[in-house]
Length: 532
View 1 (tube, rainbow, N blue to C red):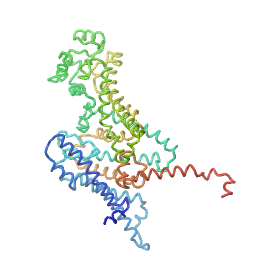
View 2: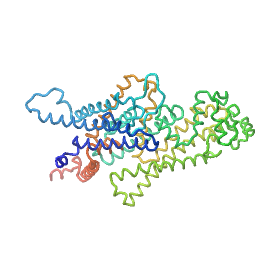
View 3: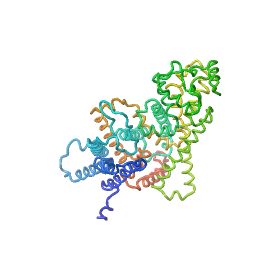
View 4: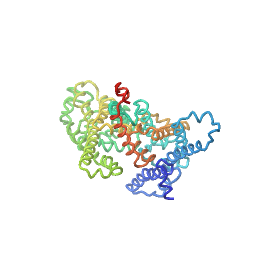
């Protein structure tokens, strides 16, 4: 039995199932148990029942990957058993190999999404965990229903599949591409990745301040922790957008959250009262600040910097940006250390015994941490430059209802922070873009339709998930060079085995050597051809 199992090829359905289920189970069950341990709540039996059941993520994904491979293998054997003299249908001979792979993967993917959206999971919809994604925010119920549990997973697969299509159809990416073609392709893709990340991060940050219900709750919590901004400031910003808090007309909020914040920080309550604060800059603002005892604001209106900066620092915008950047850098070190080290431990642990490899890994960690630090500090720098240091000082006749509104300092920060992606390496830019794009797409979708509970929403999601996952799996089998980052390594390991990527890289290197050593037929001279 053991010899029979070892004799099977790496891409046999049995091998794929054995590699898929433990990996999917670890990704699904691990975070759920960790969350249970940190919250010290009971419910281990329900978690195990959910994740180990046939409607759990692990079983569903195994059905998608292993089932597609099994159907394709069965199709091949049926074709082999057909009599050569028998008359085949008109459709089968027209189908190419990748067509058949796509059909098999689509059928298996449809079964997988049907299991994930099974009515038996409805009672635990808000508690289910889908790995590789951040769970949908647990917002209030609507009249029609709730957002689909698998929406984040569907958007993730959609983005990865679309990227594979772009790499294959637009950039003509192939496994035997020359160094010049690869250099030319990377010059374009890195710019597009940076543009995608910039646009996505701008939309996500804007939604964080004004429409957080469009983002996963845990994602909002993580951004709040990283930005280190008081929730009462965010409440005031949303009230300004809703015209419930104004430097000109006062506020209808009772109690006023900014007054409470001012008192908690040790400042007079008047520093948070919009009826007292100057709406415009100029001499009037200078007189108000002198009466209130605010120093360093000069002739600029709006909230004092001490209130906006919170507990981080006082009235110094420069110190505020520097301290927040340092805080983000230290948090990023803890975040990116496992991101850079774990793949090496899994694939090539001996690499950590080499000093150049260790130095390269440490530089990568510092580079990624610097990116996240620049993301946070650049946002705050744009806020301070807009509402205090430059723009508001140069244009004092514009009300601070605009500068502190949705199209003022917050918009400036959202548009600036994404530029920090250029600090990252080209490969990491692509992975970061593919990470934030699903969240940005989710934020752009009509929330009322998603939460309406209509059957059309689930049908469309099933179609998108089925076609996207089938496209991704077909690309992994027939054109693996079109995959990037997480999808390339994961699907390469599952479908071809742990040595697939190493062998693929070796084949590419050999083809490159052959291409450089063998002369091209168009460059042969007449004497060379005569010799041949």
